[in-house]
Image (cartoon, rainbow, N blue to C red):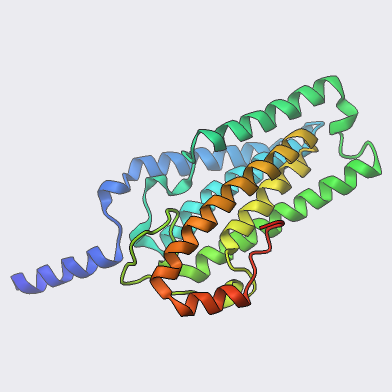
Length: 243
């Protein structure tokens, strides 16, 4: 009986995350907070003049919730309370703070620039932004779902036993679909806000970030999978511009 109990406990540890990394009340509080933010942004759309800001908050709350939810559902062993990606580095936080400041300042001094229905120009870019956010989120979520146990928010420098080379689904036409999805989503948020300055800033910063990250990650993927990854790399593009 004791051996059976140990075997059962070992199997559970292989499947489920360590409770010490997933403090239930922290996860509940974070999910509740994101839900409140999503609900307030959605419910106030009819009453606010600058509706793109509501859409931006909606996309932000949904993105962070899905980061945890999809990881917990399809890769539970690697999920932890940081999987919401709310603590995604000072650069990430400052980027969104600057985006909000640009929106508020331009909205105060040039309100017509932020009124999506003030001109065809604003309407077109707002629609492009919304489509980019939706498509980017869909691609990233599909990437996390498709990779399953092979997906990780942190770059692995040591191959684990459940780490396999994923080449099917969305990975068959995008080499790094989670990065491409985030890239498209992030730029889409700035198009939705009609933020010309932070849009350019996001383009520069994201390109630099993903150039370094992809280069570092692919060195390890080549070590893990050898010629299989070489063939995959030659046949599937990244599709992030100038990368």
